[in-house]
Length: 189
Image 1 (cartoon, rainbow, N blue to C red):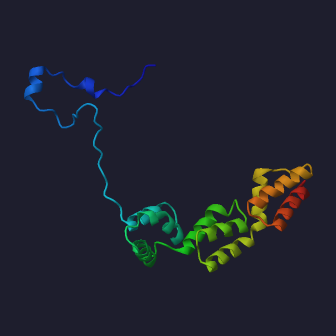
Image 2 (image 1 turned 90 degrees about the horizontal axis):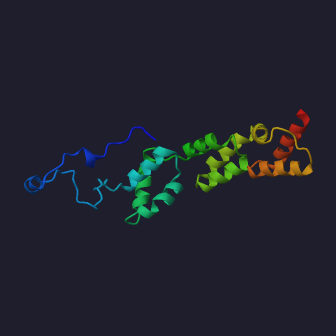
Image 3 (image 1 turned 30 degrees about the vertical axis):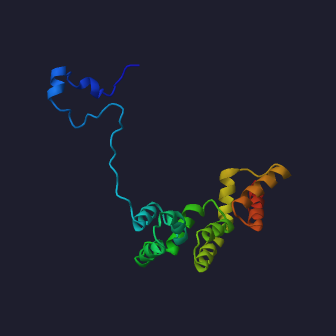
């Protein structure tokens, strides 16, 4: 195959005679054979810096940050102080974590599954309750949309019906909602 090849730096250097090698020092970029190039090291990030890096990627609850950063704590209480400072400045917010999770997952999951995920993040019970209540009004529509994307046609027999119901149930939709979504699919045909 012919094509562009990266030039080999060893070939592009002018050849040196033995006399030149003895008198002239090696350039700074030449290294002895067999040694790896030196890497520039970054200074160690503080706990606050690590937390901000995580928060820049997505919203994290305090419990999530504690789990992820506890191995970097050098003295007792250092992590709690850093997280308290970030909470006081508004970088950590249970409401934003709940809104973020609802935005990402509500179209695919039912209320009970989302509630479990919010509780696993260690959010305040009032925030979890409020988030789940906001989902209850659209539960049936969301279940029908998830069903339509996955299956698209009503079940042909009882085993197919059971498979579709299990799918929606594992997604966190209640039994009544699953039954209505599947029956609504039967009614459409």
